[in-house]
Image (cartoon, rainbow, N blue to C red):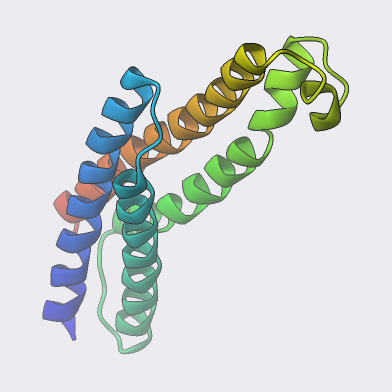
Length: 147
């Protein structure tokens, strides 16, 4: 079981690192990336599985350094916060442009509508990309403070 925990931990770290890199490229190019979202969601799933395995190991009597538990649990918190930022991206972009709703965007010229959509997507990708970087860092730290 401990070996599975280690393998899933490495997988979670690698997926989040790749998601960060893909997200950074997508953010820079101002283009959405299907691979970024797939990799990010896979990385998040791996983190959840990793935390579950860690909990099972703890219940089985395995002990690790207290910081290992902290660094292992914080990625879940970071992901939740990032999801909230992603959900508020549209509101933030619309508010910054003085628009009351998504319907107001529909009254704008097509080019302005596109700019707003790109700004929203870029903000969403940016928050999730930064979250992937933080999660990668936390998972790396968790791996280095096992005992």
